[in-house]
Length: 245
Length: 347
Image (cartoon, helix red, strand yellow):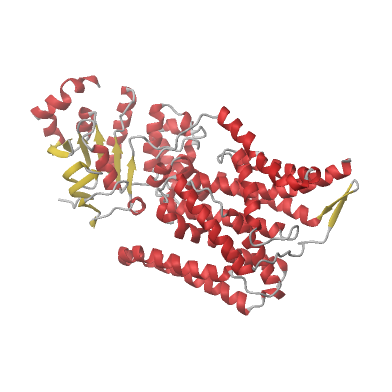
């Protein structure tokens, strides 16, 4: 078995006195797509924020590429190939699509790499729409295009671990399908992906392994195809909701 | 007032306005990136001019000691975090020592050993900048970085404190006497009966070059774009690995450079005292307010307006010239609050 690229153990995060995550542990191996599904408010975004270093955690550790961290520094994680596409996208609205993409490669440029032109071509191949709109301001894009830009900008960093927070949120079904097609394609490039989703059916279909997060705790885990058939998952997450997409 | 006088006043207004415009741009830049209202901007004007003046009379400016002391302070603050990172941080530690300890020592050796009094003007200017400009990022590290996430009001209070401290240090370093440096060139231009001094042309020309350079920096360079990105969306920028600290230090570096250069440019035109910077910076601030602390072109235009208003009011009501200039801020604020939607600070 390959050593995991990311291993979260016993992670606890609280906002003031309210504990949002209780003793969460999970693993992502290189080239694997792992999904965390669960209802709104279960702590999925908190989990990704803590792994990335956006939020401090009070207990447990995050180990990335074999190094365990008790405190995570965002800059250091970005430098080591971890990239987060946040739920809110956080694009640079008053800058062009091309500049948004270029800034995705900011850390690589700082580290001395000069390959952003080739990476940009790859991103444009994955999302031809971004190439058409490269001079447009990011703030004027449609919802789907904004998500493509957010993912494209993350890919500019050539991540080893890509974390996606609700990539399907608020998007039309057709665009959701395209985003999930891209996620499946990324696996072929060897990128490990940690995918947080409410759209449980799509997430389980595209992933290798899944965790179910409920009120801050891992309620269930297993290979995605088994989770898809698990009666509890079917009832809670796939039942009616699953037929929509 | 005849045309001759009007032209003379306009020339004066444009020259001063160009300096105010530079300072207004620096204030907008610092505020957009760090949310700091940089009141000590003016102290960099005074420090730049007075450091140059010290070199020219063969004295050692106190700013040199400040550079060394702050270097030690920054190194002491940054070292523990690097130490904890262990062997990976090796090059960073050398970088830190190089910038904060070795660099000030090299500059000190130059100042004390190489007799800058005898140097050509251009080299003296560069040496003055080499002493004063690094103070910007150093002060950011010491005063603002620990509270980078604090509300705007707290950052403002720190700015006031820092301003008072720097004015006090200015008095200690340079004394209460004012200084004036020789003009960059003695040439003057005769246009339709109006004499334009070479220094005026220098000020306007250098300001224009700087403004264009800033524009190119923000539009074309990676770091300029990173600063804009931080101003637009701090959370997004952090996720790209553009740290708040890096952006803060970079914007303070630019602000310090603009401030010091402005001081050096106006030192031949007006006598600079240790506390002159504050008033100059405040006029730049009025310009920046016209631009809502957000728009670079409007801030620059506003600052130019401040310069012209000041020149003409000094002719008509000399005693009230500051009053008139600063009263401008009231209609501007009223107009802005009526026309723009008020946005609560998001934290």
